Length: 73
Image: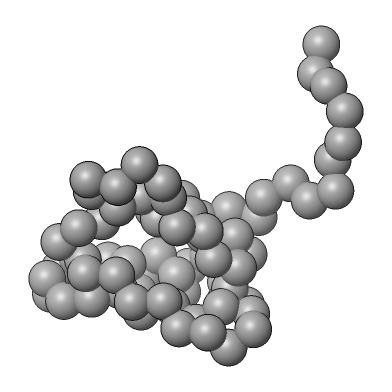
């Protein structure tokens, strides 16, 4: 599952592929924001991403569209 995290004062978003369901990711985000701590996610390759909750602008949780090529009309 693809998770995009917008960080305040950063022109680029962080994108991470996780093996957790959307509900679990949403729970991690909510807990981090409520506590004012850090959001910690582990991607599909075992790497850990740590973002201070106070700097999170938005989080987009979704499946993403893999393998599409071409133009829209």
